[in-house]
Image (cartoon, rainbow, N blue to C red; front, side, top):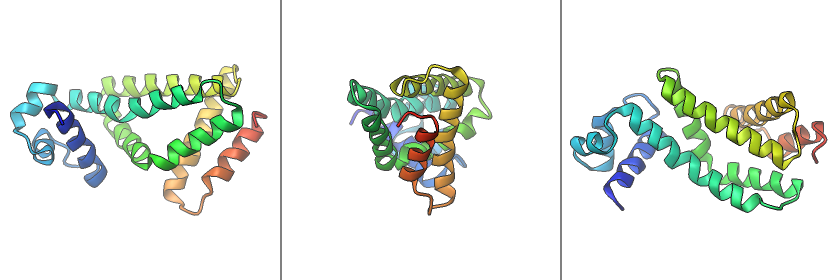
Length: 171
């Protein structure tokens, strides 16, 4: 594993294990087992590290999902989304951590905003939803289900998403 990737993997692991509390260049260097100077060399600042970590954590699953969804039925798309969420619980946890960082950085907030817009528009297009308000509502519903399923483990994500999609008459 290359040094830069090792640092990103260490930063991801640190966030998963400890959350954003104590997320410092020093802590990430220790987690990645590299010199603190190397973290500065590759990223320059904690903010830049988080921005690249967002790409590292969020982009790969989405790119793969987009490839997989091409030409699929709405039911297949729903199942692919469910599988992505089920198989990538770390991804969802990381998004919550990134949202904390966004409270303190306009650049991180803007990056997350752009990612959310891109995901919202892509998912909506898979279901044939063109109305902007329906896109926001659909996206908010999906995110809400994911969020509350972390707080209340008895929530059946499959059933909740199916119900949401039926309300939009897309299943």
